[in-house]
Structure formats: structure tokens, C-alpha cells
Length: 364
Ligand code: AN7
Image (cartoon, rainbow, N blue to C red; front, side):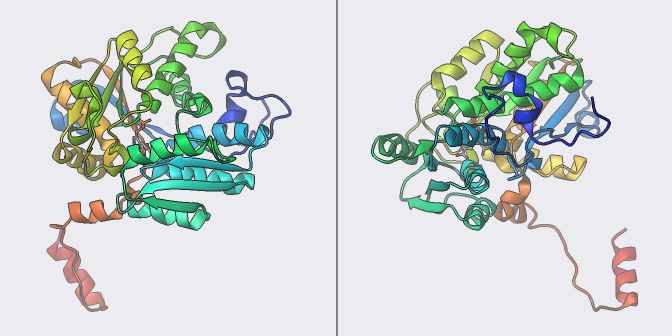
């Protein structure tokens, strides 16, 4: 390897395992290569002998794991000659689609549920200059419209029903195995459309079947644990949900697009789906911020919230190594963060040395 190798995104890094050729023009913003951070304080806090890592996907270029899928989907759309992409979104997919479309020099159309996407995601999508189409309906309604309109207009769908999305997203599992030298015992994820849990399983499975060709020492695969918000939990109730509701707007999805694929993941990995209440999700989000210095968005915290529940009950036994994916950055949803901290006490003082000194000594 050259002494200085600049990281230029996940397609270049895992090009042997992705559907690109030497002549493919790669549309990248340097996504992937996100930190796998070991939690040091929370295991002590809960008094359990477990090793928990979080894969902080909020540190991708647009602040969520969607960039992994979008670099691949937009690269392939451009390769096929497409001039425009379209998606329905609860916010993060729209931000990623908008950014990668700009990078490629093509047009992005995004359908979002009016008033139901986090402020930061709206700000991003506006800034990247996508054509926003707000609908009086939820994500599921938007998704249904996107599928219909693609037959009537020259647009490429970049939701996770586009198979290239999952190809890109599977690289997160590669990174984890490359770093740990093996797969974890349990992998916990928030679940909406269930594209990401499907993609991770694909990544772990591909690495396991040819473990000799990369750095992993085993062909182990983790138990996959998917957690939904209680008000939007079709995998827990066992059927589609028509009016999903949750404060975690990213996963306010009642008709998951990867329904069959995700049940297969559960089956093959001997994993499970469960739900977390909005309250439990918010507790986990705050716990990560205030005990580990990691600020993820509410939906992302469903992974840790679910893991903590299953560690407490013993379903995930002591001695386990667990990876929780934190799918998006907390900065995306400032309204919820500020509401969560309504009992914090910022002090307002005169701009004098004396007053600052007093503010410090009074609050030590
Ligand atoms: C932060 O942006 O569906 O189970 O339209 O933004 O693969 O759907 C977002 C999903 C988890 C769920 N965490 O992932 C969209 C969208 C965050 C998310 C999920 C989403 P999937």
C-alpha cells in the first residue's frame, strides 16, 4: 500500500465487492469509514459485563447511514444515463439524495410528509437545492406515489427498493468485521423500512462465506436484533400498520418496503424484532449524550434502547459483544433535543469576569 492513501469513499475502498467497473464514474462525498466507538460508561452504569460498540453513522457526509446507499444508487443511476432521481423520505434519504444529485449534476425530487420531518433534514434538503414535494400524507403514502410515478416520468427511484442502495449499505458490516477481526455476537439496529438490517446481514454473510480473502479470522455472523418504535412496529405486531406514530420521525413507517427480506434476516440469524416506546427511545438518546458524549437522533437510539432492554432481561447474555448502529446525527433534530433538555439551566450573566467566576463556582 502507498505510504499516503487518501480515503475517497466506500465504493473505492470496497470496489471488489461492489457492482462497479474501472470505467464507472464514482459519485462520492467520502462517505463510510465511520467510527466504531466502544461505550465505556454505560456498561458500568447498568452494572453488566458486556462490550458495547456503537457504529456512529451520523458522521457520514449528510449525517446519516443513507449516504452509503446513495453513493452507490446515484453512481449507478448516472452510469445508466439517468438525469433525475426521486425518493419518498422521512428526511434522511431526501437529504442524501439531494446531496449526491448535486454532486452528480442531476436533478433530485423528494416527497416528504408535510410537517413530519426533523428541522435539520429539511434545512439540508433545501440547501442542497432538491425539488421538495410535500404531501399531506405519511411516508408510506409517499412511497406508493413514487413507485407509481416512476412509470410515468424519467426518474430513477433511489429508495431502498433500489438494490444498489443495499449494496452500498452492506459495507458498514465489512467495516465492523475489518476492525474487530470478527463479527460481534449481536447487532442491534433501528428498523423502519428494514433496508438497513437487510443490508448489514448481506454484508456479514458475504464476508462470512469468503473469510479467507479478507482480514476476518472467522466466518461468524451476528444475531440480528431489530427495534421499532412502539407506535410504528409492523414487525412486532406481524402486519402492516396504517397510521404509524412516533416522535422518532425517521422511523415513522407502517408499510416496510423490505418486509420479506427482513423476516428472512430474522430467521437466518436467529434474531428478533421488538419495539421501544418513545419514552424509552428518548431516555437512551439522552443517556448516550450525557454519559458517552455521543449525540444521535431519536430513531437511532432505538438500537441502544432495545439492546439495554434485552441485556437487562438476559436475552442478550453477559459476556456478549454487541454493536448498535447509530443511524443518524442528533443535530438533525434540534427541536427534540431542546425539548429533552427543558430542565437544563443555562445561566445568563453580565459580561464581566466577576460574574463568570461566580457562575463557575456556583455550578461546580
Ligand atoms: C435515522 O429517510 O426511511 O430500516 O426515508 O433515517 O433501512 O428504513 C429513514 C430511515 C433508521 C430506518 N434510522 O432504516 C428515510 C428513511 C434513521 C433513519 C432508519 C431511518 P431502514
